[in-house]
Amino acid sequence: MKNSIAERVRDFLKIYPPFDLLNAKKLLDIAKEVVIIYLEKGDVLFKEGANFNNHFYMVRDGAISLTNANKNDQEIVSISDTGDIFGVRPLVAQENYKLTASAHEESIVYGIPIGSFQQAAENNSKVYKYLITAFATNAYDAYTTKETQQIFIDYLPNNSQDIANFQTANYTKKPITCSTSSSLKNAALKMSKNKIGYIIVIDDTKKPVGIITNSDIKNKIATGLFPIDTAVTHIMTSPVITSKKDLTVADAQLQMIKHNVAHLCITKDGTVNSRLVGVLTNHDILVSLGNNPSAILKEIIRAKRTKKLRSIRLKANTLLKNYLEQNIPISHIITVISKINDAITVRAIEIALPKMPTPPPVKFSWLATGSQGRKEQLLFTDQDNALVFEDVPKAQYKETQAYFLELSKHITKSLNKIGFEYCEADMMASNEAWCKSISEWKNQFKDWILKPDEKAVLLSSIFFDYNLVYGSQKLIDQLTNTIYNTLENSVSFNKLLAQDAVKSPSPLGFFKQFLVEKNGDQKDLFNIKNRGLMPLIDAARVLALSKQIKGINNTFERYEKLAEIEPNNKELYESCSYAFKALTKFKTKQGLRHNTSGKFIDLETLTKEEKLKLKRCFKPIDEIQKTLILRFDLKTLPI
Image (cartoon, rainbow, N blue to C red):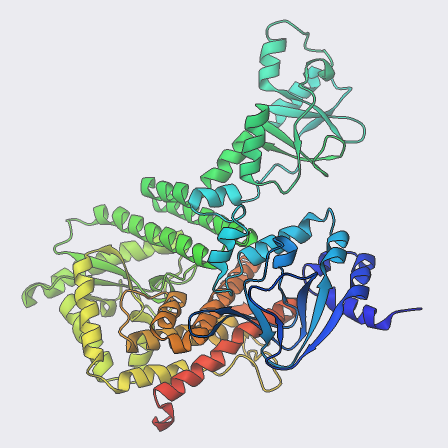
């Protein structure tokens, strides 16, 4: 007799990871033992410090708050929605609960039996890899850093070199092979034709049985020990050292050192008893280690030409893709890629300076604005930059400005060749409107702040997020102090910024459907930048300015700082920080997948899980906009 309840449970589980990695029969076996739990708002499922039980959990409907006790009250560190799993500590560590789980709203929860799950997932490395990486890098949980140091310490990187070691090793997927009946002469000709220094000997079932290298030919043939027509089986090194497909760089290095070999045969199950699927060489390891931040930054410093800088920046895209595939925390990815982008810009400036007829007449500063100014530029985007130079006598101003405009044209041209498109609105240092003396820049910002209008608000959203990339820090300190001193004397400017920050409504319509573009080339596509990221970016900016937060331009760092100085709103700010990082990661993955900026998304290409995750990220947008409306009394402003 069919168990219709178990089948319905199975049909729900199979939509979400890691259950989507199990076959239907094993999933049904789990579903038959699932405990269905109904919780009213406020009901507690398990408490912090309680002994672990025999289940972990998945939200069927509703939402579950995970809270951490502090000195005063319960601090919400994450909220699990439909399809999310939680309470996995008994599964991975068999330790008492470190958090309290309670119903954030009326909810239905599935209790997944750990014993049945482990039996069903036995020998399924993908399931456990998912659990480890998903929970070790879940940035939504404010306590993640502390937790991962205890539970997942062997899986998380601590520095650039560790990250390189943490990556999956890239191996040759179509290795050059010969059969056991081949002669050495034929094998050598094959090696020569393919310009490689080794060949794998395989049997009739494609299993690797030996390897021949250039060293074998030199030591055994050139010395006369064997004739050139000898069978490969007479001189091959056997048995070969094998490994599985998903080994890390660190694991590969250890195996090569342990066995004193320079080649690993990658087989279907990792043993000599299965089919050969690839070869990993010592050279492959060196290439993997070379594609890390430290090596890339060294290459940038040594680069002599713009063409070389472009190839290096493309390496950074590969690094970015690897980081995302390895579930490296997005906050770390943003930091690394931002440093690379700034280093690329610095080197472009250094290459441009000798092209000028004379050294710079006065000190100057090159500013990145927009996304690079916020240190959030992951993919190639258009340029936003500005230049500030020291004050000069009025009679020398035009000549000095002309010098820096010419320099800026060289720099922006180089950045364009590297892959950063020219700004369509010409908001670049090569435009005299954005290439000024420090006094002119001070006057410009004062004018925007004290005489605000729609254009001033638009420009402020770009130029208030600046970051010194090259040149005089002193000039920028002067500019920053002027901005914040002027803000203290303006009541209406922050209100206008706040009004601008709430002009974009929630990305979801009345019936929780995505709001897509209605016309044009992007019709029916979802604009994740304008509808998802920009409301969070704009809100963080105006709140940071109103709180006189200096030196922090990055959006998620702004929210983290706000959470620190406004503990009453800590939960909201931390959820905004999480949402921004999650949306940034999603946009970047889409951009890499489709070779675009990731700005516009075809919702039909998304899975149900991806859509649910997106919707969860949109929740803080509505809350932060309500906060701005109340805080800046926006109802009194004309619309």
